[in-house]
Length: 265
Image (cartoon, rainbow, N blue to C red; front, side, top):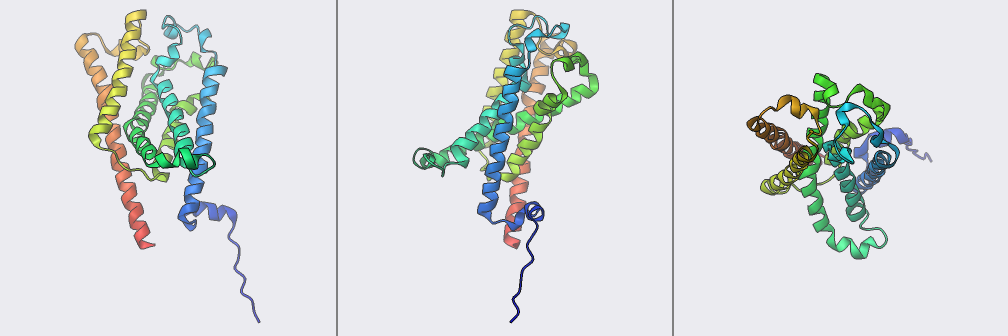
């Protein structure tokens, strides 16, 4: 009597062919992935806060900007928001079925997911794409205005990419691995503009108290009040809003494609 033996599937091939997993296995894999992302962001924040010594920078570009001037940079705001977002997703959503989460997190799971979706499409995606893309575009055009070469003595290249490159990849990964529900456009717009307005107020306050812009590029481009209004209207409101629309369209397209694939399988 012949016994048919199935050839075992190599582990690497099985991982790469993620569709061979069941839905629950895929979701578990994505939850573990987000746990690693959360750990990654926590490390980047720790390195920036406790390892980098930015107080000793003596480049004229960053002198007289006030205490803790780096907290007035939008890249640092974005890093802090990203870290808080992934910690929230990991603690209050991904592991709601584990341990004490069953009693004090799971009953509020749908509300937690609604908050997650609102924050992602209102803030995480548009701000990340806008900040990171603008950073590298300005670096290509005139890098010293934003990140002088001398800054490499204080900020290593890997950390620069950790703040301005990797967030794009991780944000897109979050989009394709999480089952979101799109919030109302007007609510997302209100949330985005509230954050943008807060950051503009921070820049204006720093200019009023120190006499200098956090970003030299503002002083190079703006020379009058109408130009200042136009600059902030474009960079702080219109461009992030366009990125938010792109996020809505991308997710609508990807979710529609996923539903078609499920129907065919």
